Image 1: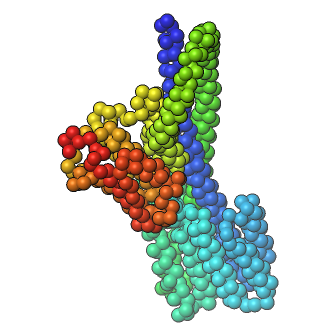
Image 2: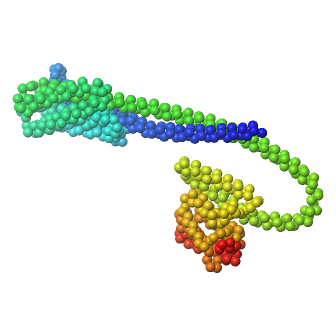
Image 3: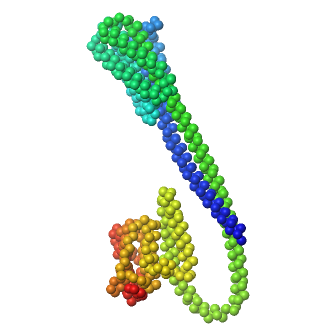
Length: 593
């Protein structure tokens, strides 16, 4: 006889373990999915930043070629190696840079929500058409304006691809250099090259040239300090970056200082000892080193973002694998839970079949003795029918007020569970539902013996009502105030039952319809009668619906009248509801009243 019980315990333990495992699996699955979502968002940001860095690198090449084009616009001017510059070849090079940009823009499906690139291309085509028809000075001015738009476009790309958004200081310093500092420095060096060459060609300097050169000179001096300071911070943050960029940075700083010294010694001093060709070569070499540092830092930025994107993709793969494993584990657990529960159901079916077989044997035995009772049955058939009818009526009333209310409470809890998003509260409400269901089952079993609540039998109306109020407050989170005066000892059992059932019905109606936050219950022993008042601050209702069966008021009225008392309800829309029951003292068993 112990083996079946042992197997039953084993099955219960197995089911509990499976359910616990499923809970853990669901928790891990939720974490994994949320991590994948967050990873996707971060990957999208880094991918956009990487595209912006590549875009910036291509614009760097365009900027350089346009500056060179401006330097030789309208003239065949010799470089340091004596080779003649060809403006047509340089225009072709600029066109190629534009083509590279447009191809990349199409490749990344126009990551910018702007038409700036195509506007720049259109403006460049206009400049090319006018190049042979206007003076060199006017052409230089047009290209200078065009270069300014390229610089603005570099900043625009940085903003739209969120390049500046990073928690890594190394990235912040690199982006600051390649977006704000180095492009601007290249342009100021190019302007000094252009204006300085003119000064040396003419062997004189105008006020406008002094103003222009002084502005660019001071701006470059400030930018050099900014680059030097940023490089120190960058190298301290990232030794690997220092290894790659420091030699280029040192060379760049030295070349820049040398060129600024030439500007001071040759231009501002008015010596004009260097030839335009020599000056142009020094300036071009300096600008070349600006672009070397520009390219090195942009490449380093690209490499960092590529590595970061690779890490995020590996993390996403890991989280995806964890999610897949969690799903497989949940499916496996569900399958075994189903098998375990199926075995339990099969065992219950076997037991039910045994019970049915026993019932059939009893019925057969009953039929054997039935003829002995036929005479007695005829005599008492009418009495039994009447008793059954009375009992059905009584049980019907008790089922409505007791089990009916319990079932409605279960329905209300299920609705609360359906709306509740907090997992802990959902478990609490599920447990409350189980408890109410268990109580309802116990109450059904007790109906045949006594339809009165055990608390009424054992303790009386007031303790029973206190217990009910406490449960109600916990279940519906509603504040209930209960006061009583002049009540000592026990009331008549019928009165206690009637008052208790009225309270049950009233509280159920409040939970179902009123949406109240406060309930007041008062029980007073007055001179001529006992009064019970229940008041809430809920929605109230139309007084014409006072005894609608849906509200349960008719049932409360019947119970009050059955106890020899009266029942009154007072309510208005949005004004709450008050129920008052009075029972004359002649209907009350006063043990101590």
